[in-house]
Length: 339
Image (cartoon, rainbow, N blue to C red; front, side):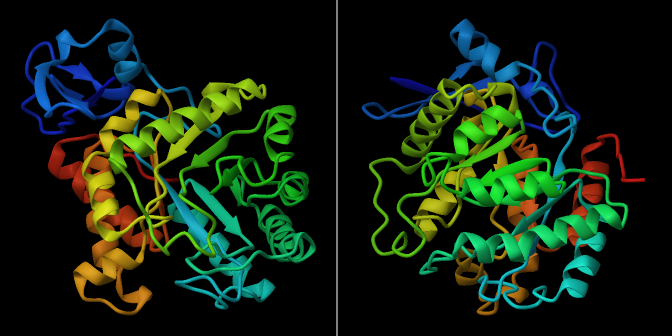
């Protein structure tokens, strides 16, 4: 089986005949053909099979009401005592509301999670997860936050309570593989869903991550999860995919995935990249503390923008917005800022 990774470009020197990647801001005129049994090779984009070109160039439908023709930011709001980066900072209702409103000023999506899925984390009881997340969602809506709010959960009862409270999409690190009731709930409600790749459960996923070819393995796994979601009645146009940086991956795996992100456009879904403050950034960048990894997180986010990643999930929202605006200016791209 061949895999086709578009060589994404964003500079102004776009040649005649270059193709637009996923209907967005990148172009490509070459494609790297990958295989498990042969060396990579470059071919002109026009030599790709027609169905591949349709997936690579097709305009992505709006996701959670947001057009996918420019980069979007998802801001992280962890209302947990033990998240790897900001555990405990936003447990208090007032702190969570203040932070959520700040995120909403610079990011298009607020992502609220009540269960840490860091390496070694243990499962949180449903009632506790609901008690942590639902009041925050309700408070944000009462405070006037009108944009998309995401519930970061693996569990159907939590998602159901969050959607009732005002959440508008589901972000599942298990890609609907943890709770068999979550997929049917998403299908019934017709809400967008993010399917993330993870090798193993949070408690053990970093014990011994192993892949034959991490980029191709993650592609195949996500393709299977998208197909499974569609089989449950979920409209593919409401699905985004996430390679799951740091979820059952070594630093080398993470780097290989980030270098090859544009391959995932072949799935025909928007791509979400969530690498903010992850351990490999600290290991490479010499930052032991998670809160000191903002510069490295910006570098990874910029790499994602340059490969046409539509949604970037970050802790440092205002800083990432500033980096994005400067990157767009240097690329000669039109700049659109939040009102």
